[in-house]
Length: 245
Image (tube, rainbow, N blue to C red; front, top):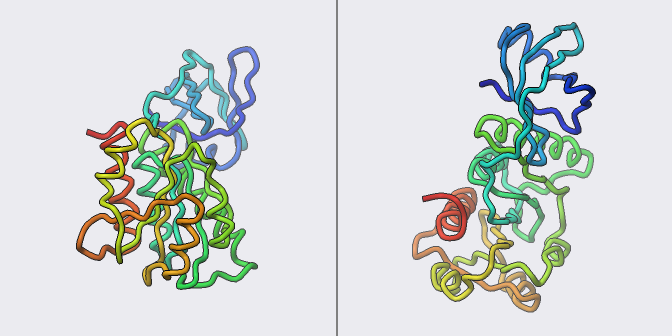
């Protein structure tokens, strides 16, 4: 059944009004009409199943038949802090991390980040990343759209997680094996993990993270690309503590 994203939907007498870009998708792309069944999700975990009863140029009205909570989101709360990647790699990362159940993504600048995105471009890029997360959530059946934070400086990003989170930083030069850390912290269901740029972290940056309670970890002997490392890390976390496998 086709799914559409409507944040904070307006509902009155079991009728849900759909506006914005989803109207074009319903009417012109999928050519749906009165009598067709669809699902609306609000991005916060609630879903509405029903039938189209009215079509207009700027809105579509659905008769709600069922309201339910999404069951396709992981109970594991994972926050990925990712050093800004160049080209389309950041877009790809956000799409795939959404599919893998990440709850939040925090892009940041570190000393070796490339490119250093101009301030005038940051808001435009943020809107793009939010749209990618929304479209990916729609495609994979998630009920909750991951939050994409604004770009942070490295030191600011390190201050974000509360002590309740297991805080990890991936460092290719040294660190405890991820499996060992997970084995001794089995009670943790909130995990904040930091992945560096393609050039890696400096010794000073890792030292700063350690002072704030971050544990340096390694994924093994091979050097992975930044986007590969992030998705590998997230897959392992979901297998060990989440809903994969």
